[in-house]
Every structure is written in C-alpha cells, then in structure tokens.
Length: 232
Image (tube, rainbow, N blue to C red; front, top):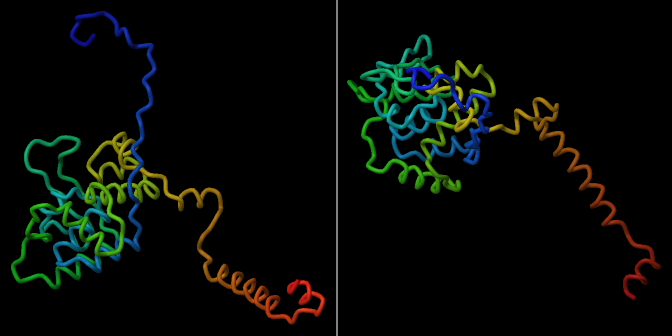
C-alpha cells in the first residue's frame, strides 16, 4: 500500500493474535541478591551483579561503564552507546536506587588510584561463573543468569513507575517490556487485595500462644478411665 503496489491492505480486518508473555523466569529477591553480593569473589563481580539487578544494565553495558559515567550528585548512570542510535542501542540515563548508590560509592572509595572501569576484567564465561556463584550462595541456579537479573529490575520498576519511563531507563520499547521482562509479583497483588505479610511478630505470637495451649492440654494428667481406655 505504501509504495502503490496494491490499493488496500487485504489483512486490515484481521485481528492480531495476542503475543505470548514470557514470565517463566526466576525472580531474584533482595535476600537472594544479598547472598550473591556477600559471596562475590571481587569488587568487579559485586558491581556487575548489582548493576544488572538494580539498574537493569545489560552485561556488556555493565562491563563498559566507567566511574566517570556516574553522576554522584544526581544519582544517575550514563549508559553510553557508540555508533548509530537505535531504540535498543542508544545512550540513556539510568537512575540509581539508594542500595546501588551506596554499594558503588563504597567500591569507588576502595578502588585503586586511576581506576577507570567499574567492572574491570571481563570473565571468559560470565554466565557459567555466575551460575557457580549462585550455587555457592546456596541458591538453585537459573538460566541466563545475567539477563534474568536485568528482567528482575524491569519487573520491580514497572510495579512502581510509568511504563514509558521504565522503557527509557531499560533501553527497550514498552511492548518488549510487556512481553519479555514483566512478571507480576505477589507483593503487587497483595497491595491491591489488601493482604499483608508485614506482621511476622504477630503471627509468631499467635503460633506461640496456640502451641502453649496444645502443650498444656498434652501435659494435663489423664483420668483413670481415660488411662484404662488407652491401655485397652
């Protein structure tokens, strides 16, 4: 139609089938992330894991990030791309959440004088090495470990921020985010339904009171007739 070869689109009345949603991947909690960071062998490993999970960077973007790309005042990262810009490959600004800011600041203070790269020394097989680190941390490994960390960041952001902003930070389209990066979290459902899991001490107290009643009933002396019934 655009170039005049036909006068009308023969498929204009067809309804496109909905795209399959890719949500079958591991959600990495902050507790799991903490274990990975605690067991990371080097500063570079801590930084690349944190940048993928908490800032949604691709592995290659984390490897190319320099300390000069961090704006400590604005708490943002400049993720640079060289060459012709595309929706997927372009320079973008990414916010740093407080946990990531504190981690990177500590690593910057400990870095050697004149250090340039945030994550120096790219491993030969990063995904294999990260899977080994996941196992050492007592966590069941998952497929595409670095890419999955990036997906986790997108999911967290989409639960709190407008999709267009998240797409700009992640460097992809909202449609790509919907199809491949978003996973509905239980916390989001609980927020809508009014359910809460924020009262463990109350639950512990209730369980302790119930256990006390059960123990008390168990330890009470049995009547002679009940004892004879048990013996029979």
